Image 1 (cartoon, rainbow, N blue to C red):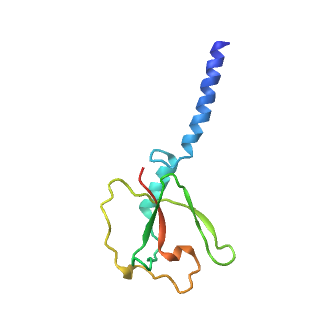
Image 2 (cartoon, rainbow, N blue to C red):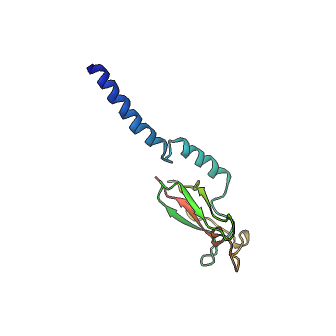
Image 3 (cartoon, one colour):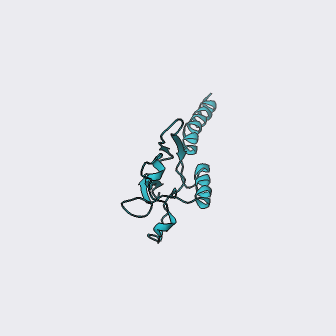
Length: 124
């Protein structure tokens, strides 16, 4: 009886703590590996520069944030996408960007992605 009680407690604690680790987008998790792979293939910006800075602006959010909302005008214009990119500890510093590489914000933007501010997860 006592043996099965300890097995039940161990099983309960494993089930209570185990899945909580799977939901975190940490460095060692499956979701973290997917984020690193996608971040290596795609740029962190959306191709537009911020009008106040002349380059794309990184809006740093906590490292536990997993998704962002893009608001668009029109039918079906809003969407939720994962935040893939994350600043690392070995970040070399600001990069050199040429404004001609990016498009300016349109006079009448139809999506929040066109404002030149993009979410980036902070380092762990």
